[in-house]
Length: 495
Image (cartoon, rainbow, N blue to C red; front, side, top):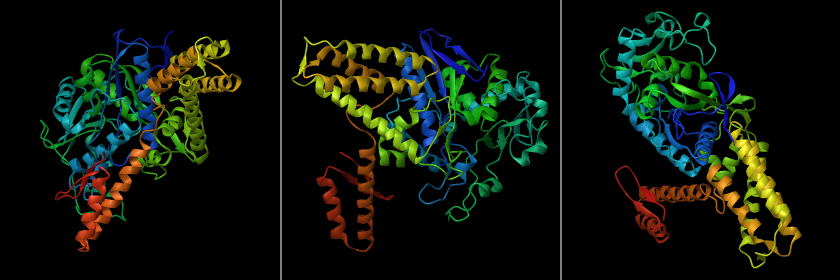
């Protein structure tokens, strides 16, 4: 059966046909690491993860790239805040470390590479030089802008018209641009004080007053990459000039992804991405979940509270192509669904591995339910990765397993074995649940408790109670926690 996807580029539901029939080139437009990741970010991660898993299930060799934007005025604005770091690179590194922990806790498959903007500045400069040489970009006061009027197909992804476009970029750029819709590929100098102040919290104290961010030398002078050019450069570096699937949040269609299309195709003369899949927004009280609005729940907080599996269940309960609402009610519903799936799997395993499972017993109803689940699950996932329908199919199998266990004194070994394998293959390998054991939440709780003990130990040391501080360290080591002291403070490793 053919996989169909909804392509933002055409607005149509299309059969998926990669450039290479045996492999898929997948790029996910990753996080700007200026804060801790929230569930809106995790929605994109988890759905992309399931796309990756399903494509592999279909037999494709998936080459998956996901970037970190570690050069951004929002990151520079947090320099000197709390313990985040005293440079843009330090702040980015702090948040990247937490994002990676969140990804692992959510049981995401690893991408082939996680490129960072700061690592690819030479590639970005090369791409900008190509655009200038071909007449698609121009230098102005040390900055470089893409001329949207030179690219005939500008607006084809977002259905924008150049003559109706509003100005892009910051207000101080407008006098440097030929057309209001032109966008920056390279920005002269560092981050302006105005941008820093715009993104700083007036109630927060900062140990660095006027950070300007990282800068690099270029043919146009010292400066920084523009936002849009980065993904084109990193995608081409690791996946080539044309990719099969580009995934990102719906809010990035314009201007970010539209500009990616223009600059990439202008530079190469080839189609940039065959299929654009956009994850619809996660909303709270009718508004997009956003760090800037403060209406968010962090990934680490959600995992600590309800566990990684329940978080995945919540995020997959609505397909990527539909808007999702975050509320106490929708989260509670997801917890109930996860408990039902987990309990159903455990009951299937217990019945299969118990003394009452017999090779001579055959239950046509149970075996038929397994076949129906596989068929419905496959239909759902091939229908634009419809995880909502796929989950419903697995929960129908839970009902069939419970009915079989309730109605029989002796169990169908073969039917139960097929049911367990179906749960493991479709629920585990494809949807990414950790069946038979929770991950993430327990680990996070243990880490939080160790950190609390270490904070107490530091307080005792500051007060001169060295014997008490040493005793707390000894207690942790007896539990298998390896504590290491350094000039920057204590660190630890769990057993």
